[in-house]
Amino acid sequence: MYAAVVRSFDHPPRYEEFEAPRPGDGHVLVDVLAAGLHPRVRSGAAGTHYTSDGKLPLVPGVDGVGRLPDGSSVYFVAGDDVPGTMAEQALVDPRRAVALPADADPVVVAAAMNPAMSSWVALRRRISFRAGQSVLVLGATGNAGQMAVQIARRLGAARVVAAGRDADRLGLLGDLGATETVSLAGDPEEAAERLGAAAADVDVVIDYTWGEPTQRAMPALLKRRADRSAALDWVQIGSVAGAEIALPSFVLRAANLRILGSGQGSVTAAGIVAELPSLIAELPSLAVSARSVPLADVESAWTAPAAPGTRLVLTPR
Image (cartoon, rainbow, N blue to C red; front, side):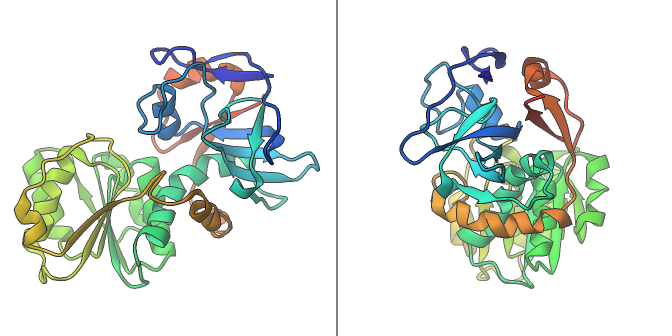
């Protein structure tokens, strides 16, 4: 078969022949219809994701849409012990797959599920989120952040504060469910003050930034909370602004701050898969921007600038 193949962590995947995987241990071989080029896929192909084992060569791709031997289509999450999904064929563990409606667009599903899953699983599995609560999405102008704004509202958030740096994309979030927006552009201290003033009393923070924005935002929010004993769940999902923060001890003592993460390992594979049918049912109500690229063009697509808000999806042709 043909696949995107990584032979060096310093070079994008190349389109080349690769041995087709052989079904075994309950796996089924499917024809891949679409596989999303997510940030998680990029970090895995670069060997920098926390789950990377450093072994080469590898086929990247963590999920996709595939056609089963009986002609039906499924969305599936790839196992850690099988080749990735950016190939003409892939192995599917039926326990990690969910049937798709006959009219589902494989490209849209492949583009949306991974970024949408991050906030959906966080709000449904990592915390006890209740309808009527308020949410801050930190890093709301990214693909996953844009999804998080919509999903928080779909799950009953009464108020969603969206914070990000991209002014154009920030301006679009009101139509997607944000009740307020906060710019993180400009002077970092001033941005933190704006954020603290707007979002001090939220119940949940969905954080895709980490790094300096989070380091400044935490004390800015907590100092302004009307009731510091009211619980604030800070859910760390992404780290686009940095992998580490300095956390002053007073932040943990002076307020009821609960910091936790949501990602691969913090939720079981079975727990994630259990959420997929309800998320798939919501996809038609979510705004999704996707662009399909032939698998043969993976090397150029990997390095080409992507349009803001658009997720690239690789297809067999």
